[in-house]
Length: 149
Length: 397
Image (cartoon, rainbow over all chains, first blue to last red; front, side, top):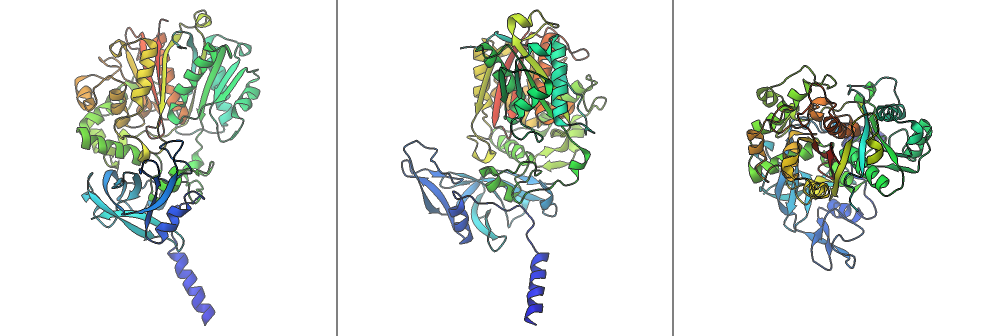
């Protein structure tokens, strides 16, 4: 009986398997994805200038004598620009149209690519206030997405 | 050291763009079009001592020596250029620099894109890379964008267009007019993919929206093709088969790979590239007779015209309203039809802006020849407004 239930669970999981491309973290980016899995948004910050960096890097773009440190941020920002995909940008998104791909400008400064979710795609506007939401797409991977505030 | 007038494009060759290739290798295409360009210049293979190629699937490394060997050359200068759509223009500026510096005397720059029918049937994708698995993309762009469906280039240019409309205002008709004028040009170029198929502004705007706000007819269609040019010293060029297109100026700028990390979505690196090219050439914008600018999307052209200095920032829409962009108009733009209507054969599509500008300056564009064409502006654009290379070509040194 135990075995049957396990088989059923696996079958159900396979049926709902996440088919979209997943991030493949590097040693440099792993802290970002580890934080996302805990539903936290962590960025790197320049020790010298206090400016924030996204995506994660091994070196600071703000000077040769600078270092970067990981810090947690609020996850609030606004839509800097966006598009509504009326046709899928890749086959894995075929059943998702229309969907929004956006550049979100975080309050801390950096730009992030994400989807704007939990809203009518046609309601999205540049300047719209958004906040991070955490999409657990697999047991290992959580994507940081944004929704209107 | 300025490159002004030291070198010239002496030979050009191009495959007619086609939807698909059949039974061809990329190496074969690269070599054939290179050979044709050398023959077009009236030169012998033994005179060519430099080669610039792109890396290609069949030669993921050592591409230059692969092509040198295949062509039966001996090269004193062999290099790869990897600037996306700016590769063609970047090959020419590097060839000019290598010749001017005395590293070699004549360089063939060759590009080709093969496209087999089967590649349209859902190529294998790696877990992360959105692109066909011939090269696995492990760049940060892929890790932080591909999971969100930010794949290809359509989404990026759409976000540029939306941001431009937000900052400066732009009517869809103004973007559509660019596509219509270039289609008019293509209808005067029998080699263009869309020869014989004129379109109207209404047809552009009633074509399906692919990614807001871009319509299908504002987006290039990927095709197969090949293009090559021969660059040689100015004195040698003057004695060859055709009147040459002198390389008067070159400029380059790159700031980002991913559009999310571009310094601006609406103020591009074209400004710095074009300023450098015009300064080197000692040419004013008003003197340009033909503009051959990379046109993967209509919005690319509009921003290019502004940032290259032909229109003020934010006034690109009005510039399009006020000018006739046809080859026989007052601001001839992409007389071959541009990639939107000639065909977008990968890096060869980018090179088509070089070959067309050279053809126009050489007076070798029957059916679409721009009158009194002495100075051409070329811009190559790689990625999503990433790599920018500008050239000024002239009939006289």
